[in-house]
Length: 506
Image 1 (spheres, one colour):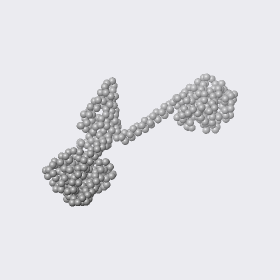
Image 2: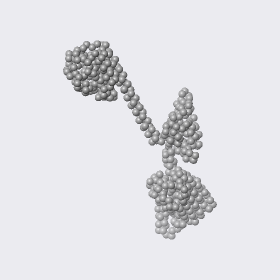
Image 3: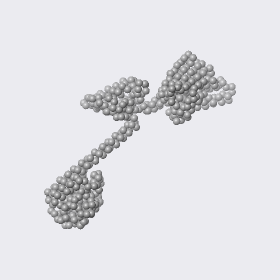
Image 4: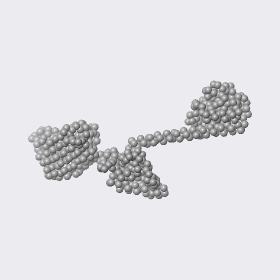
């Protein structure tokens, strides 16, 4: 035979070939009837003593199927390459026909002659789907034999059947890996959608049939599997956003456009005015000029919208507070100057009132900055006293009546925001602009509701429009309704200003 050996064994140790062999997980695997049958068939058809399906790695040959081997090789089902003729089939990538190995200059020193009685050998390559030679399908005789081309063709045909089985296993393994990867990708996608409060949909525009994932039903607060979910979803769009939705949808359906739908809109959550914000996106597929399919996502962006709203609120509040601070400080200085007899007395009184003003600001700051953890726990009466202190010109200007109500840090900061706005308003426009005015605050808890009434009397004869119709009123509205989930009303009577607030309490 032609010498197929290579000094470094590069053909045997090719990484690509070894990877193909490893991917089939056949080395050291138990016997399998499908391969045993192929070996039995070959030995019967060729009338030989020994038949093998030998797989060769870089160090040894493993007999996936065998018949007729002597002990101990029949039990171990492997030999080192020193006992292997099959390695030469792998190295050469071609059939190997040997009449008498003892006379072959390449094989005559192979230990398989002595230990396995391999004299005559006929082997054909067994290949993976990528063409890499995995091993040899062979017939062996313990005496010289002249092999025929017909006998080689028989082994080729049987080996082709073995290769078909290996190809099937490779395809099955590939499909199984793809299924696992698709399942893993879906799990990652589901996790990403859940983390991002996002759902997906697939709408057949011709039939009206829609497929929603569970997350989308949850966002729209619809029962999973609802009939015509899109119809129900459109009915929940805020009336003020309906025109924008219809315009965006019509644009997406236009075959002359880009087929894209994108809109931030409000979704009503019930008969009340409560709503969430969503970002709805979609892309339309056209058949000629007919829209046939729309797929997309809907994401709950309420947190982002609240953050944007708060950022705007913070900017407005900063401007509002600076203006108020100058006005209040000017008023404190004027009042203190009128009441003080000496410079030292004025300085002490002014310092005390500014410290009180700072204390009140510290209670309001966490609510404005949304740093509720920075607010200390307190009670409602103490909170009111702290906030009112900088604005009182006489000790009897404020009357507080109500139950003891403990407030947590988050509650305290939100209550402080509302009360500070009312106190500032009273100092600028209402009862606390002079010494004759009075503020009476009453509160009580009944049947899970906290009621708080703020009455002002003795102040200027004004409707206080400047203090309640602008940003201050907006701030109160956002805090009471969005943060405290309550409601309020304002009444302007000839005798004074009245503010009533009701909040859920448990």
